[in-house]
Image (cartoon, rainbow, N blue to C red; front, side, top):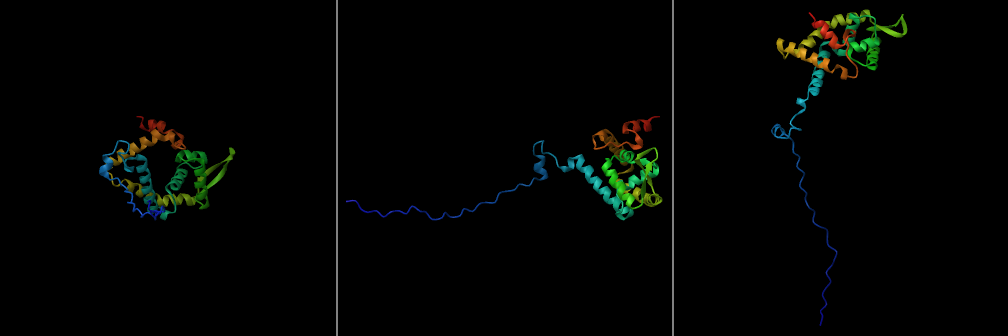
Length: 204
């Protein structure tokens, strides 16, 4: 005779929670970076572009600490210096002297003009063009802070001995010259291409 077997409930209770182990995050160190493949065997300190950018940041900080209590940028001071050396040049020529595009030059001119450090006048030979001139206040401003500007440049190069400074400046100039045409705009001091200028200066 078949016995009645009690039914086994098919609904199971909740499963016990499984405790997950946290994922391991491996932070590369100098030793295992060195042991990696050649595609990852470098850090940002191996990138010349990063070092140039960092050196520029340091230069701006040094310049701002010394010159006019940070009330003028290196580019603004450079623009005023150019106008004292070459008064009456137009905006396009200024851009070539500084290696800046016209939009940036226009903004710098506006800021300096608002401070009465320069003025723009209509070119009598081409009324669509304006010529730029440093005002008497602008000339006094550059004269007043010229020495401080030079000290900021010397401070930037101070970790190098005199011989290394000459080598650094020569190599820096070669890098700028060799890559000049790859920028948003070309640097043409005195209206000349850098290579032509270098040949002229170095000629016997």
